[in-house]
Amino acid sequence: MTSDASVGVLLADEEEPVRAGLRAVLDADPGITVLGEAADGAAVPGLVTRLRPDVVLADVRMPADDDGTAARVLLRRPDPPRVLVLTTFGHDRYVLDALRAGAGGFLLKRTPPRDVLRAVRTVAAGESLLFPAAVRELVAGFAADDGDRLTAAGLTAREGGVLRLMARGLSDAEIAGELALGVAVVRTHVAAVLAKTGSRGRTQAVVAAYSSGFVDPRFPVR
Image 1 (tube, rainbow, N blue to C red):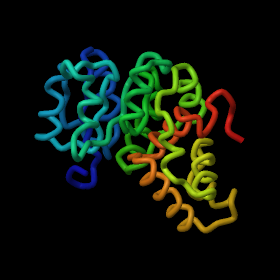
Image 2 (image 1 turned 60 degrees about the horizontal axis):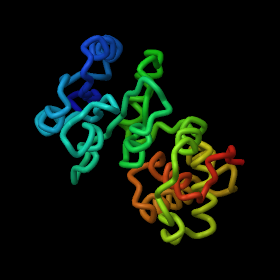
Image 3 (image 1 turned 90 degrees about the vertical axis):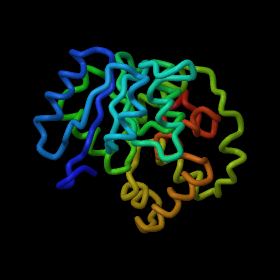
């Protein structure tokens, strides 16, 4: 975090009006500080190193180099920042790729201001911004290519059950209530799921669950 526990944010979008709109929203919150802006994807990694933001809001299609978008390049770093991708359309292969790579979530550029602020705080806290229905529809719209990643992960029956509840968007406390377990026990299972699937957060684990067929993305999770 930046000084005084303020959440430091880097804005990365090629369109100046988009950056200006986001800056106006974020600057209105005394608990959030916009540390800088980038109009060029190639400049984003250097700014992250220099400014050390808590969250990077990056356009999902913003090119960084010949090998990927700014979001994907950041998420390949050994110690990646928390990334929240911005998109005009939710049904976008670039969004799916970013979530698979470990982005904390995605926001439509028309998202209301209060939801933008909530999303930034959620991702800054190390949590995932998970919209179960949107993620399910996103994965269902593209061919699965994660193979047997989750089958080979060796999840126990309990861990598999916890992952299915994660796919419904349930919090640790809600999962605990569903399974009649203590919250601390659920957190242990969630940590095991993330470790065994090689996921940085809940969203990445849920995307892998859908993509691998562990949870069928064509149907709502019960």
